[in-house]
Image (cartoon, rainbow, N blue to C red):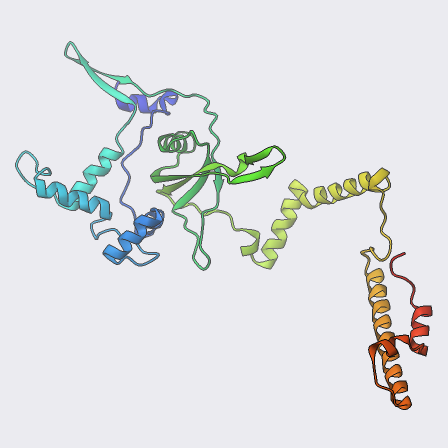
Length: 332
């Protein structure tokens, strides 16, 4: 049994077998550059002068790390073949990609002059790994990158698991995978401090051979398309109806029962007519007070007395009497 036969066998699809990938195009190279860690991008930008949003690959397609490795091996003479010829960067990168995309999970052994292939990978028939596809982190003003896909995965899952699962189950070919862990901060609880499990996860940024365009968000759609999309979502999932039912149930459970007994009464009502009436009453009260002070100042000037706040406050004017009799107390 050879490797090709094992590759076609369904139960051996979990053995990390990959195919040689074609050269990346310019957009995929730019996506690969943008997905590198921030410290690496800043160092390369300072050293090679790569602009933001462009690729830092050489004309031959080598990354700065691959170019440095090629130069180092060439200087020590480790690239020569049996005839002593040094391959060009393109041929060396092609051989390197073949090495990277080799069939993994198999081991060839020779016993009594007979070569055989042994499966050393672990066979998983029904993997329970959950890969949650989310949108890529796209800065404001920049287009969405279709050459990358972002997943939220369990913290125990490795890059090899992600590559194998995407290829074996979904047939998705990948070029690179970068992972990072997000740890939830500490939150104060009754018993002290604790982390929130749903804020602790592992993110995997996967480079794709074929572009994948994530569905548009509602905010990015045209008004007509957005309205049709909202109707479709509401018809299938009834999100707004569920929210309304939750509000009605909350009101039913908390209205008129024990300590939670409450009703919408003025001045705590939320109806438009109640709010307008309260605003009008407060405005009338303020205007009556101002007019009463003005009449009191006129009275003191006619008497020739010095205008004082205490004297103004003690004068019984018509405005103050009408204000007290016409405006009811807001809070009883």
